[in-house]
Image 1 (cartoon, rainbow, N blue to C red):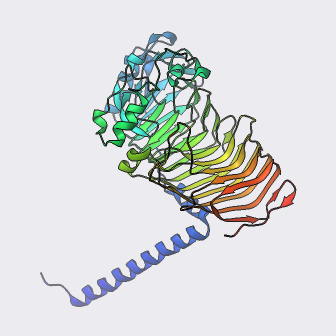
Image 2 (image 1 turned 180 degrees about the vertical axis):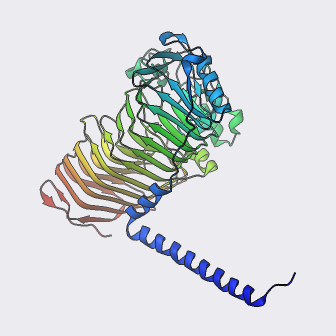
Image 3 (image 1 turned 135 degrees about the vertical axis):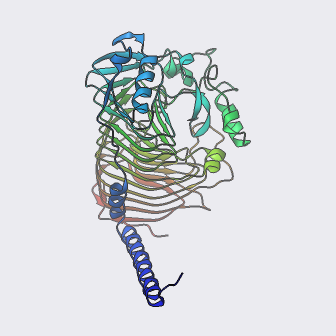
Length: 479
């Protein structure tokens, strides 16, 4: 082969210039993102692909479903979803009415769509939920299938203004939590029995393979409600979710997830509203959370299991949401061992005497990991019970939560935050002397009323800019 040297030389020059241009552009974007992180958020939003489905509809009634709230529709839902997927995808329609079913397993290119007055009632018989690869409190295992489950699927959705009802209460799923508040009494089996929750944690610490961590029936570890496991391009839109057994919306190891216009109203134990775990490029917007635990809790695995997986949750965006009851409005942790970074929260309203904190980061020295680059702006807070910002490296709800993996937390910014009643503290933060919490910025924050401005232990570099608490301007702390 004869190559024209002149052409080759010109090609090399052009390629070099293009490469330099690309690198320069990359540097410029990086610089812009560092100078203005909200521009980075805009880039993330634009990069997330949208779901698209064929214009075909598969009505579950055509596959033998009965809308009487009593007849089991498990087989009808399965057949409708399978047929839809085999024909290239489309919409599986759940018309108005009440439909009892066991677990629903979604397929790629399928949009499960609920009409406005449709309600799916999920069976409370745990025997109907087969073993699948899932997760419990940040530890992977083989356990009861989530009520709605998708594993290794692409282009999948749940849409429509209907209701998903887990039917959990103090006589079925919730009682498994082992709390008297949820109906448990001495002598009733629960997740707290030695061979259940603690056994799972010990297996993970010993490095036992996930496929050998077999739990399910008789172990009382409640299933997640909606779980997308290792999925890509996911949409959950407009649905209402009530009476959940456990965590409600749980994208795990998933990318490009949009949760839009969802209403969660569920006050059971561990009823977190949305828990992105080991997930990236997630948008949660226009949602209402009224929960028995954290409204939104960003996770990345528990202890040794989180370090084994090693996938940080990042590029998590929360916009235009309303938080009512809950342990925290937007929370990172406590299962956070692989780290969390680049979280953006804007234009939200948080208000309830039963909402304990607005923004919360919780970890400990069993978890480890790095949490950094958390940006919050344009938030209206009516009432919170404890504080506006809570950051701790000593989270210890179950006891004995100290180890050799001291976490790192840095770069937290709250801007244009208006608070009527901030509870006990504006900021409550405690770090390690060897790993202080670093770089907290409050800019244009007004807290009209709080018992104390802050309580700080091993916190380095707190910058207050035009911030007023209890009517007084707050000065920065540099150390």
